[in-house]
Image 1: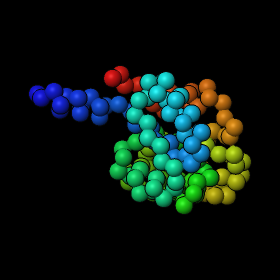
Image 2: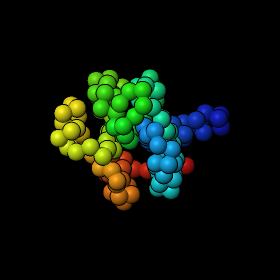
Image 3: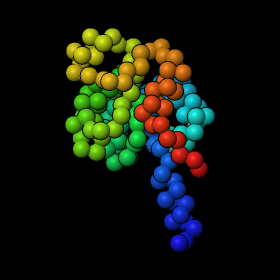
Length: 137
């Protein structure tokens, strides 16, 4: 086996977490937390339309989704992702300052909801519960 193909296969085994977040400070915080916790494949997408176009082909293991996004709001994106065959079973943690009744009105029945402002440990606990096996590099 060639060394390059071994490295490529090893990289494919790492978990990919995609954060759809338009606030650069929060996006940077997500990267810092996730890299510290051993999730080294982290991708940030800063608007809903780009996420709609990119996420179905990315193979994300987990999506962190902000509701207040430019170009396509998070509630609409959530529904699109749940309806797409490539993302319908991908765990999504919805991050929002909205109340449960507002999310219900938007058509989101999020099993994984992280209210803003959120506790970093709570975020870590949710991610560990959804992705229990970190991949070593």
